[in-house]
Image (cartoon, rainbow, N blue to C red; front, side, top):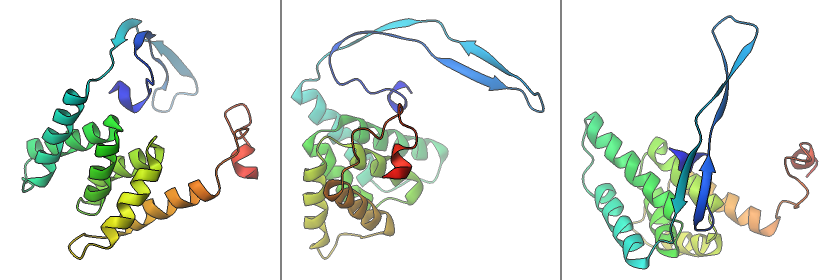
Length: 171
């Protein structure tokens, strides 16, 4: 799934390829494997499409969970959809769902909330949810809220990047 490796912030045409350094079991050297290049076009999402994608994903996750592999895969796919949308509405749903899903399925929501452009809205939604008597509050929910608030209070300096691999450690 390309969305798990690359984020596209703007509509446009992009060329994408992958380079993998693979090492066979018990072999001292790795082999570089390069994929073919493909061209993709990212179009702006319209509000109706975004709302429908969110509605469908939430419906899957709010339904009783099945026990077979197909039901599990549908739930994982729904979580990924919500995490990729990154709209104010999807962030609120991700916050609500974070306390209701098992940790394995909730992990992509936690990652999405922490990386969202709408983090302030996510924090506000999570604080509102804490006040509701029927909202499940799991360790993942509390950890996500604490990490997001800490990141807002103590933002990582811009110079802590790939160009400065020790920047994060120094911070």
